[in-house]
Length: 441
Ligand SMILES: Nc1nc2c(ncn2[C@@H]2O[C@H](COP(=O)(O)OP(=O)(O)OP(=O)(O)O)[C@@H](O)[C@H]2O)c(=O)[nH]1
Ligand SMILES: [Mg+2]
Image (cartoon, rainbow, N blue to C red; front, top):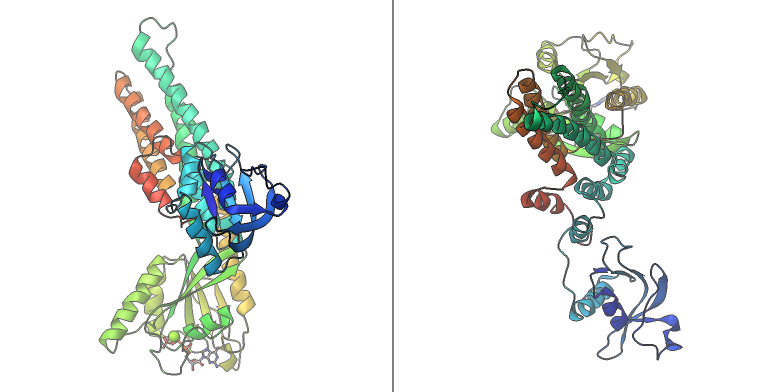
């Protein structure tokens, strides 16, 4: 339990008795040393009854998470103990924190910027090693430093422009136009483009790679899902059209979360429910970063498969020839224009090779992203806004006499960049960020 605010220590002194407190009973009220862990107990001050044995730590302002006085109580954690302590804390003048309120205070008190506050949520929610790394780099201020560097360039060009607007005639050597335009391009637009690309390419690494398992009915899609997960997640049966609703589950590969979607077999639907299921299959395929297109090995090229593959052609696809245990001779993997693998969901043969192909997709992504810094959706929108404003400024600077307008666009770009760090972020942006937290963070 965490208490933050100017009266946090007072509340602690009221409810907590340190072990050695018996010896020091006269020295009231009790004053903890900052950043030291005390063993003791929480007592109900009304009747002196002991509620729980706890560890308590006080972090004095400004050396705390919120930069206010903070007290943390580590109880045994049973719902009853937590509830009893909570009631005593509330009766001592505290109120319940709102979701994300501690982090919001850390932001408002200037300990972290908004991008770092978001990193805290990412740390809490990280499902994989790669997501954890991205969150840590964000928390360490990686993105914030890049944004500052971009801001400096924009300010530098703006200062040159404004000097020209202000003292145009008196300046001995007004800044050369092509140089300013070039500075905007190489100093701002290029790095902005890189950050925007790493949002696109990095999303799967941070949030997970969405993989759809698709194909005709009965080719073994659900069996493949179960084999990949190592447990019976989806219903398997010899009857075509078994899977009706898309089934999702997670698997971690190379520190990245894979969210696997088993889908209804693709064919002419036989009833309304199946039709809805098949529609969902196509939605899963459209949203996927990678499609495992499952085929029945040894059946050759079935016309229906050709038609399906046609619709998948411009998506990242791996052709998975399943049921090779039924093939007397190794079948050809001659599926056009897609990496292919021969597997048996029944025996597990070829699974390693399939995982290797998926891992290669991840490696490609990782190489494309390059750095550690992966902007999130909010950052992306602000970066796009900044990029558009700078492009407009650069275009105006190519002609004479538009300095005022160009300067206006640069101011707009600066505002957009500052919103990432939270400097001038409007209230609804803050609301959106902190509402993603849970209580106590
Ligand atoms: N011998 C053999 N049988 C398999 C293999 N994979 C799946 N099967 C069988 O093929 C049948 C269909 O498997 P499912 O996994 O339900 O196929 P599906 O593609 O999910 O089918 P729908 O959900 O109807 O689209 C079942 O009887 C499975 O036991 C395999 O690798 N080898
Ligand atoms: Mg199925």
